[in-house]
Length: 250
Image: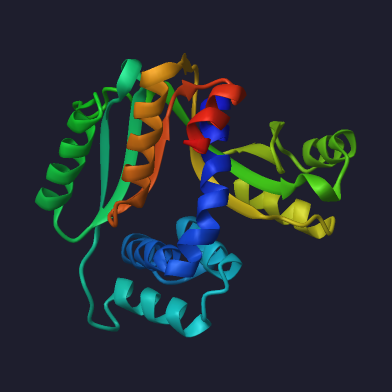
């Protein structure tokens, strides 16, 4: 799980900046809209919408914004028609990339993503070329400062979690995809402070990178993550902590 964990930790730090720019609101609104269009506007009957609304609440999004996004998805309000797109390919060192996007212009988005991959030593692959390397999981992040690792692990397992890892400032609790909402609810009922909770893609194995390839991948991941249409980007990489610190310091 280390490839995902490292990038997730970086996104935590970047997320505070993104929130100031309003970027995180834009992404969540797109996700709410698409979720409501596909699965309906009732959260109790739409797990994907529930996750999106929880993310919106965690980002302190006004309830009116959430309501309007749902209504645009269900057609009660006019708005841009977004659609889900998934792109698969490879980055520097043969690292597998799984990219989830929400777009109103699929030709524009695929062209821009293909350009970014080519610029940083990667290429776009066929559908299904790398999806098999990842497994969909729930991920719940809890601040390290508040709990001991042993006690939190015991609680997480009692609540139905599969695994837990420590990444810098957070304990990352992994759940089965189908169990995500129930585990999150159980942890909240124990009065555990949750920093974030999301559905993610975890690589089954990782490729170790260093030097130029590691630098190229980090730059590519940042640019993909900053793309307006990209919701999530996953990669099966592993970089030593010392190497990661060097790259982030440059």
